[in-house]
Length: 172
Picture 1: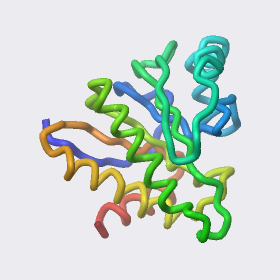
Picture 2: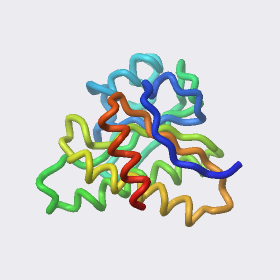
Picture 3: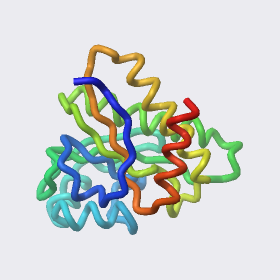
């Protein structure tokens, strides 16, 4: 299997992959948007309990729980930064959230992973910049782990976001 990065217009909770990534908050609480959808589809009580057992996750880091009722075996909860203008290490923290997620996927023998565009919703990260960092982090992981095959999927909900992501892939 050759590693690939692809973008699909699809609900992340519907993907048949080894692991999906939740754009989580540092307290690992149920949020809105993608996070809320993941909690509801996985099983609210089970996922709340698993996240409560973990406690906190720092910005730029990631933790893993079972996927419960999802097709995915696992959920990686990655905490991206809140956009504050770009001068508060946001780029480094966002890159780290992707990197840590991919490392956790590899450590758990996952050969397919689905990401949302972390921090680009309620956290306000500009989408074009978020795409560049996401694709660079994934590309760097693939280069550094060329012996580990993994299919990386970005699940988006709009044509505009899909086009931005495809442009970012083509420009790397």
